[in-house]
Image (cartoon, rainbow, N blue to C red):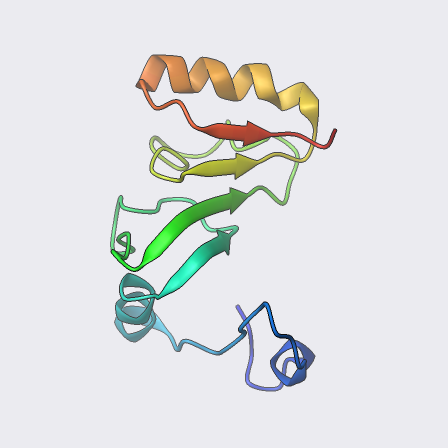
Length: 112
């Protein structure tokens, strides 16, 4: 979670917008109405619980930030993302197996 005093919020970047979205239902409401070409997220569960896809986002990308490549997530953790970035190529076959079982093929990339 980004805090109000996070240095990232002070960065001047023409390509990335950083902002504090709040907590709880207020944060989910903001996420559900995003307007962006690409949303990068480390949070699993898009379109499963409270966080729904916004009609104004072209591409949702999940980035794993730990070993395991997302295969240890609960059911549907990455199912509704358009792409998944993995921490190593070794996890691609595992992720493809999950996709086959769940019939949810997507763009999956490792580190190479």
